[in-house]
Length: 114
Length: 110
Image (cartoon, rainbow over all chains, first blue to last red; front, side, top):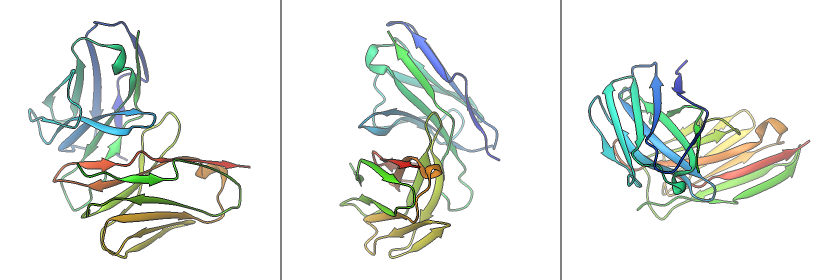
């Protein structure tokens, strides 16, 4: 089974703190994604990476950065957390083999910024 | 921006009832996926439809892709409490990306 794990299920941070959200997948997938999920807004893509050291901005990259130094790990960084970044953060991965576009999701990190 | 509109946004039904949820767009998608998300978990893929007019069945769930590949529906027969969750449709919009609808939150009351 594909497994995508996220470093924390719940996180509480203060405004202005630097926040790291870690995601690890164990299936040697090339592509990895970070989304945030908010009520009434659905899933919105923050950043994605199609391979190691590669990254592309998604729909809402402002206030975030990412790092992908190893194939299995994709980190989301909030340089200076703000209250409007309180949200559920979901990581996903996908293989480029075959024609499926299935994305495998982690359980999510619920981040609260106070 | 390609948008996917899902309806209804919320649905609460009794166990044993049938229901249909919809996913509509003005854009054409090369493929469309349906995911279910349970509380506190990430979304899990249910099905991918690729061909216009395609119908796929997964036990009591029937998925249909519109002939023009702009819309899709999910029909559940004899809903059970285990069907409770957030149903998301997602259309392929590029080599890597999916665009997600906002979801339909289904509650099945025993």
